[in-house]
Each structure stands twice: as structure tokens, then as C-alpha cells.
Amino acid sequence: MGIFKTRKNKKFSYSPRYWDDKGEGNPYQMEQKFDKFRSTVGKSKNIKGTFNDALDDLKNGADKTVNRRILWIVAVLLFAFLYLIDFDLSIFFTSS
Image 1 (spheres, helix red, strand yellow):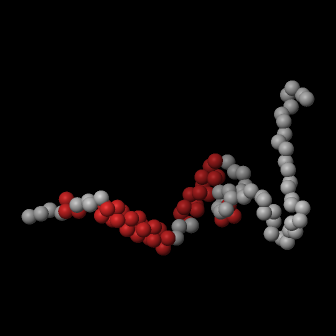
Image 2 (cartoon, helix red, strand yellow):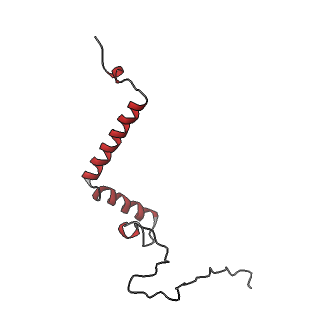
Image 3 (cartoon, rainbow, N blue to C red):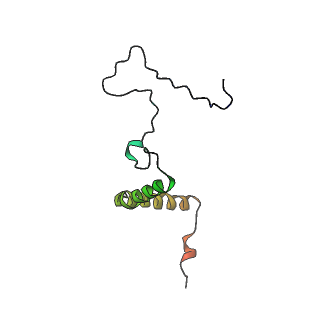
């Protein structure tokens, strides 16, 4: 045991005894669900490169129908909440 040597982490490659890999990969491998669709995950980059990739995804990857659907859902939920708390909308209109 050296004084200046750092310990290395142990790596285990577990494979079940009666499991046959048919090109599916290891079912016990830890992987995020959407990593294959993200461009910011994978290659180790610096912070600026990751930030630039995220901005490119934000500019080019947006789907307008999804954004519109989210706005409709938020609006419906907001009006349902205002109805439940008996919010009076007449304060926004001038009464003569």
C-alpha cells in the first residue's frame, strides 16, 4: 500500500447464469431512458460545448404542436383552478 497511490474503483461485470444475449444487450446495464435521444449526453465535453449543444437543441428541436398543446393544457388547468376557488373574473372588466 503506497502513500501517494490512489485507490481504483472495482468494476464488476455481472451476467446471469442462464441468460442468453440475443443482441439485446445487458438488461442490468444502468442507462438513462432518454440518453440515446439527447445530444448533450455521451461525449465528455467542456461546459461551453455542452451549453452550445443545449441551445441548438432548444432552437432547432422544438415542435410547435407540442408547445401549443402544452399551452392549452395549462390554460384549461388554470381556468379549472380559478373556477374551484370561485375567482371573480368581473374585476378585470369595467362596470358602467
